[in-house]
Length: 231
Image: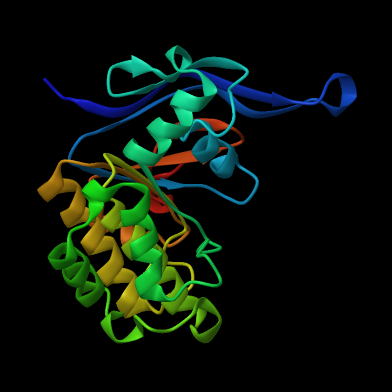
């Protein structure tokens, strides 16, 4: 039996009322299994960001249910949900979201201070080396290029060691070689550590490295069909 890391059932999200009403998501079902890397693609404005924030429990759907493992997040109060997000969900955002006054090394120390069980120096060094940023440990975010900041953010998410990783365009700031390295690393992380990973991307070259691809268009979710096969 497939064990689900994350499930969305009958999800819809509506903003506004009357003539300003916008249906961002429309009766959507989605799941990612443990050990699976799923790519989500779609044009700008299709609902991908809304999809990710609802999957993370950062905003509530208008209808439907989000479950982490077998438990609906509706069962948690706000404090419990915040704890759940820290323990179970890792984020990789386009903006990198690093603490500006901490060095790269200190970004990892902060994770360890919040949760001492995360302190694994050998694992940290392996991740830094895999992403080619081991020489940047004493640098501040202001000293890093956009691609370097993105790789540090990915490293922090992996070091955090959550059950689920939600990545919003994690390779957008990277050159082709680094982009392929990152998506391969995410695939290995999913398989070797039994994680569910969801990656929003515009780069269809990366899809070959994913276990499955779905497409959001006009708030609706469907299995991806390459353009050459679409009618």
